[in-house]
Length: 178
Image (tube, rainbow, N blue to C red):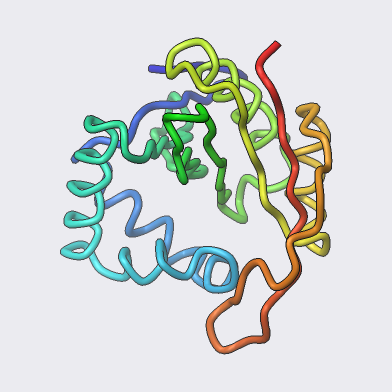
């Protein structure tokens, strides 16, 4: 376990998570199709989710990408997923991406998780710069960034294109190790 707070815990993804991730993605498909289309398409059924989790566990072990789960400690219900991705080991930089279930939205779980995983990334992974890239219309994610002292750096013009939509400008926030 990486961290625990308010009855929730953060853990690295493991192969036993496949069913929970499938259920999580399918239940939140309307929310995830816009900003998490690749995660969603890889978890539309249990067989796909098993392949997804095996791949992510291997990437975690090889330090290529880190996927964490946020689970309720008692019920083991999956509340969210957090990636540390786009790793650049030369510059010691990584980017957060996260999604939360509609049933847990607005409870501060994502903010607390990013706080804990920022410490983990700095202290355990040796990263020096963490990024959050968000569309300014995604107020929840902007709040997560600012609540965790990520500073706005710049607008990335046409930085992300949701499936079947026009490209969106994205805002880059960064946090640096003290």
